[in-house]
Length: 452
Image 1 (spheres, rainbow, N blue to C red):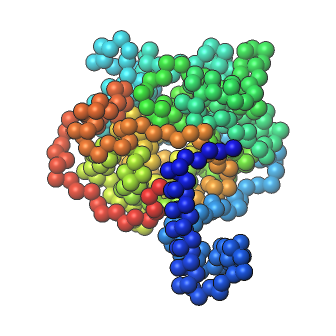
Image 2 (image 1 turned 120 degrees about the vertical axis):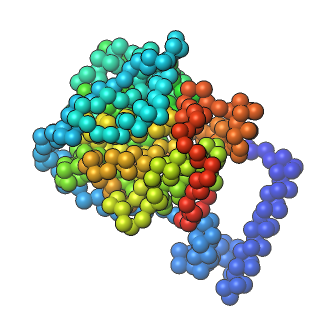
Image 3 (image 1 turned 60 degrees about the vertical axis):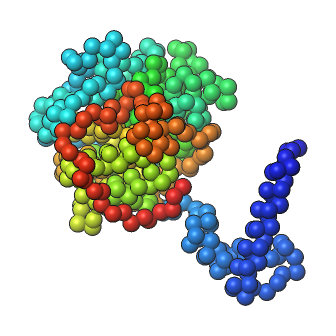
C-alpha cells in the first residue's frame, strides 16, 4: 500500500478541487447538461469529438498518438534483390587521422584536437581525403577481442546502443528468416549498462563467450572517452562505420526503440529503390536548426549560452534558416533512426557530423543540417516523411531520465564557477573562434511546438 504524507494529501485534495472546478467551468462554457454521476460527466467531457478535448488539445494538454502512415515496402523480404554497391565517385579514398602531433597527453582525446583550419579544410571535397573521425590512438572505446572477431563477418548491420543503464534491449519483431541470417543485430553497451541488463533480463552466453539478449549480440565498450553519457552514445550512432568497419549497410535505432519492420525491407524502401546512400526522417515539428536550438534551450537539453554560441557560429558561416526554397524538406532530422550504405561519401559525412558533435554541443540535430549544408549535393540523401518514421518502431520509455547539471546552466560564468565544463568534449566552445561573433544576432524563431 502506498503511504501519502500529510502535506501530499493536502496537495492532492487541492489539485483535485482545482481540477473539478476547471471541468465545471468548461462544462458551463460549452453548455453541457449536468450528468447523473461523476463517471457519466467525465465520459461526456472526454469523448473524442468533445469541444473540451479540442480546447485541451490546443493548450497542449491532450496527449496525441504518434502520427503514423503505411510504409510502401514490398510484400516479401525473400523477393528483395540486393543491388550492386554504389561506386565511390567524388571521394574515392578516405582515411583517418589517428595521432595529433600537438597532443602530448598520455590519454589522448577521442575526437582529437582538430583546429579551426583543419575543420574548414575537411569540408573541401577531394578524391583523396584524410580527416579526424574519432578513435584517436589509445583514446578509449575499446572492444573485447571476442566481439572484434565476431563483427568481422557483419556486412549488414542493425545497430543500437545503451549507455549508463538508461534502457534494456527491446526485441525486434516481424524479422524474416532471411534477415535473421543476413543481418548482425549489434547492441553496443558500456559496463554500467551491461551490469544493469544482466540484472534485469536474461543474457545467454554462446560457446565463444559472446553475450546475447534474444537477437541482440551485446558489444561491450570499455574506457568510455567522454564525461557525458550522451556524447558516448554518439560513437556507435554516428561512427557506425568506424566501430563496425566491415559493414556495407547499417540501420541505427536508438536503444529505447523496438524495431517492427524487417530491415531488408527498410533498405529496399529507403536506399535501393531511389538509389540513395543515406536516409533519415524529417523532424515532426522543426524545419530550421534555429527552431531546434530554441527548443533545446526551452527543454533544458544543454546549456543555453553554449547552444547559442554554436548557432551563432553556424549563422556566421552561412547557415540560413530553412525555407521552402531549399531542396530538403527540413534541415532537422529525427536522428533516432539512420539508414546508410557505407560509401566513402556517407562515411565522410558521418565523420564530419561527429566532429561537429565532438567540438560543440552533443545535440546532433543542430549539427546534422549544417554538415548537409556544407556538403551540398555531394551526398545521395533521402529525407522521408515523419509519419513513416513513426511506423518503423514502437517507442519505449527510458528506465530513468537523463539529466546533467550543465543542461540547466544559464550563463557562461555559472558553467565556469560551478565546474560544469566538460573536460573531454565540446572543447570548440571554449577555443577562441577566428572571428568576432559579438555582433551576430540569431534569426527570429517561430515556435511550432510546446516546450517539453
